[in-house]
Length: 113
Length: 115
Image 1 (cartoon, each protein chain N blue to C red):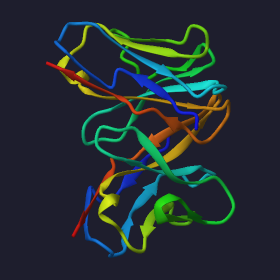
Image 2 (tube, chains in turn purple, orange):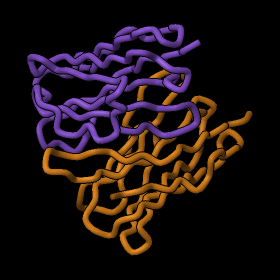
Image 3 (tube, each protein chain N blue to C red):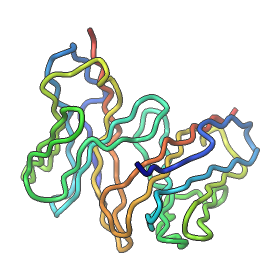
Image 4 (spheres, rainbow over the protein chains, first blue to last red):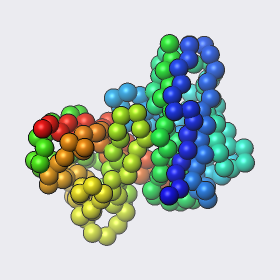
């Protein structure tokens, strides 16, 4: 069964350092999402891609976060510099273009010290 | 914009007892509704979804949910829970945009099944 892949699964970093997360969606899924889930809360959308284009980044803190999906397949989310408040689970999801059901990866648990 | 309210942050229940996890959403227009389950340090797994049709939706692991448009609710139920059902459950509603569907999640309900 096809799955969304994410790496690393866990990341510990010190504040002011740069971190990057990688996501490989299910093959053929044109739409890719990055969510942030703070402990005790539900996931919140950070950025949505349609193929290689960003279509919604209204909740992305653009002073320190960036996201790219250069070839319209896999994607990278970067934080520079990391802050203590960035400690969270970062989830990637994908869906067929216009699809309703999103398929989630296992997530990357970030701890900023 | 859509919003989702999960009315209980934690639900303790004994094994083999029935359980209901409550979810209300904000919009009365046509929506897609979902329940996801999350085990510690894992991603989200889809339990069930309502897209259209029958208001009673059956999902995996014996869970079901009922879509009630007039009450804007989508409560999750299971007639008999197991220890393995201990997890956090998230209700989500789709928010249609020009480019597809963005999910808006509730804050989650932790289900604790006790022996």
